[in-house]
Length: 268
Image (cartoon, rainbow, N blue to C red; front, top):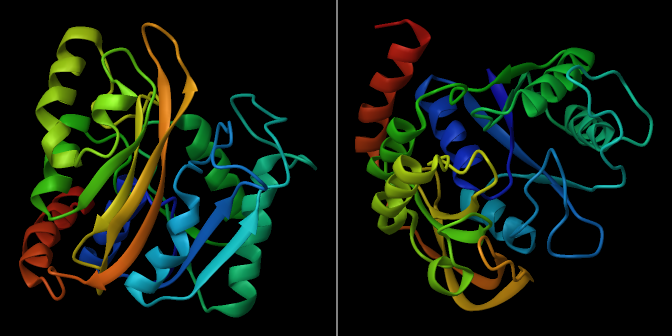
């Protein structure tokens, strides 16, 4: 199927795209929702840290990018979702509807892993638009998933931390691969979600086998959002640039991940 990928810049949306390609789908466009006038938006639905670099993300993949500014807020926060004027979910509806008008898309790549809140709302939008949601990461074991992302040459760094044991001054900007052992320790000791599904951290992808160019961070600034003594919250404001990807083309990825995709799809 021809797919539009919902992207935040993070590891999950990127890796789900990789799984879509490994399963035989074609990514034809990217879609992103951005905050109106600040770096970070408190949202139940969307990652917005790092949104300044999304244009480069699309250029790295050589794909059209569709963006919409988030105008709504979290109004209908119940277990189920009904179409609600002014809710941020309706921004997603209008974004994907705009993509449909420009591109021949049949499905939506979604990087959801654990959040029923996100899943229900994305499915609501997809049903209304006649699109098929593709969420290959859904309910997978997080430790296995994180290890798999790293082994498949997904290079990401931490751009936000918000959990006990994670220090903005120490851990922001660290490569995900370097952080994996420490995240595993935090998970074992304190129940931290190793993939950050509890909001513990967020990432930005710099390179992967789908990128024709890689992102390089030329400068970064740490912003402390909350100086809590036990779980300080901080994020990065970065200035990336594009360089030739060292992974393109990388056929070994497709050999590995085709196996994973087939197993999950019941094809092997």
